[in-house]
Image (cartoon, rainbow, N blue to C red; front, side, top):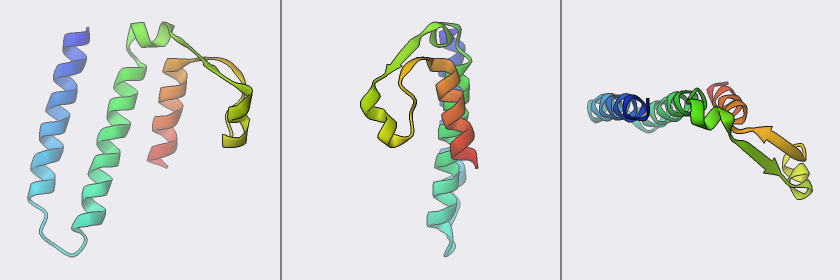
Length: 89
């Protein structure tokens, strides 16, 4: 499973690199950023669905409430998927 995840991430990065190299217009900075965000979103979704990651718990301390996070134990897979959704918006 891990080998499959690595191979899929590498294929995505090669695809992203090829697309960004071919951009030569005024909007290239914005376009490159959108490909990078898409790559990050895809990677977060891929990792969040990993069986080992989905079993992990992450403790968010009380001090992080000022950043909008709720204190407590949270499922890492769900948090990563949530972050991907937020980046895609």
